[in-house]
Amino acid sequence: MRQLAAGRHVLDLALPRVMGILNVTPDSFFDGGRHDDPDRAVERGRMLAAEGADIVDVGGESTRPGARAVDASVEIARVVPVVEALAAEGIPVSVDTSKPEVMRAALAAGASMVNDVRALLEPGAMEVVASSGAAVCLMHMRGTPETMQVETAYADVVAEVRDFLARRAAACERAGIARNRIVVDPGFGFGKGVAENLALLRRLRDLVAAGYPVLAGLSRKSTIGAITGRSPGDRLAGSLAAALTAVERGAAIVRVHDVRETVDALRVYAAAAAVTDDSPGGRGEAHNRAGKGGTGGG
Image 1 (tube, rainbow, N blue to C red):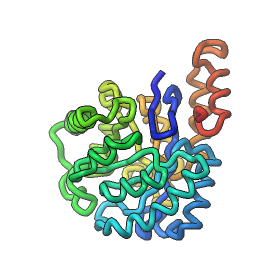
Image 2 (image 1 turned 30 degrees about the horizontal axis):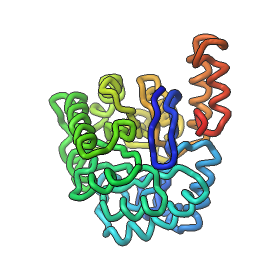
Image 3 (image 1 turned 60 degrees about the vertical axis):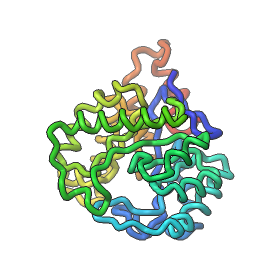
Image 4 (image 1 turned 120 degrees about the vertical axis):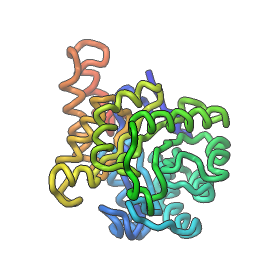
């Protein structure tokens, strides 16, 4: 049985998990400004957990294409009160940041995971995570959010992403981060065009084969819009289809804006995918686990 060690939480990855997105930013592409007040953000985090999120991912700096970096002090002021309040209620919290100062402050406030679009490449970031018991998600991104969509051509995007993530995961293990604390993310939309995102989704099993749990974040992204012709606010159906496709191809965690709908879709998927009611991991077991909050219970 695969498990993810994340601070004081242990997540069973026998069934797919849902990470709920909580952006406490004024400029994120879908929900920017909706939760930038700490009280509203905490209430939203509670709602995501109640809807079945296994992890609430709190971010204080937008990483949408073209976004500019913010100062660490600003990011800390945005995320720490929210992380502290949610973690105090026993909710597993991830902090979406690349800055070691923000990681350190959020971990001290109770965060159980670091979700880093730069895969701990910032000086000092690796040491902060290694000295904690937190889990880490390592993402592939070419360039920075401000520049990443300038050049999206690859000879073989899947091979490049796979090899990069394997190198970063190996570096983490050498630094003392146990394998059962590591998740990898191909970085859909981060320095990739529609063709590259679809290639990664089609061949997601190539990344899963490396042996680390894979997180897939496609929720309401521009690739969904390119396929459906719909704006971010009308991409729920496409996002659910993408999440289910990722899970079918081995993703252990899906990062989404729409937790309740994704949890319901995954429950139906788990029931339909089961071999028999009585087999280990069969439909009855899937239903029992799915009834314990989220898709597999905590």
